[in-house]
Length: 179
Image 1: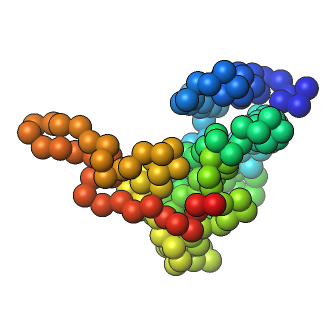
Image 2: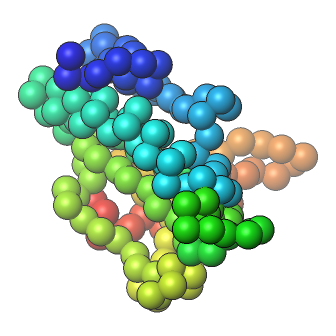
Image 3: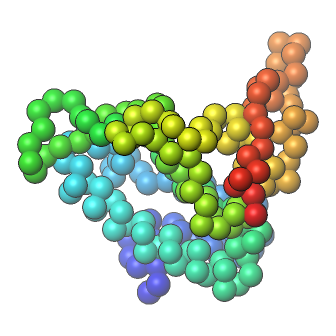
């Protein structure tokens, strides 16, 4: 009951059960029939999607904490892009959307060594430019790998005679996110 009903609730409950059984990496997503990629009907579309995930995510975090698993389980939620505060096409009072925005996007992380209650980074009043604590994708990956106990500078693969790493030639762990 705590997780609610529907596909997302079922997936998130199964994810908790997998964590309890020691599965190390689990990925969930909301399928193609229910995209967060709304360029119109934003209010109606996102309200529906949020209703599908808010309750089960809260239940997951509560259950992991009660079972003593949240400290060792890193939960990450994010999307493909940030969103501008303006949209393409004609907007009306009841039908409006937002366009893709590659400069600023939001991700939430919980457990797994993340400092609780931390807000990291800030955009201007328009949500367009980053004005405080920008996070490059290489820094995000370095931090996630650090939280997983992996040294991002040593995790490499050979391709065309060169050693590559996920964080390429950059990437630094962000101490402000670490508990």
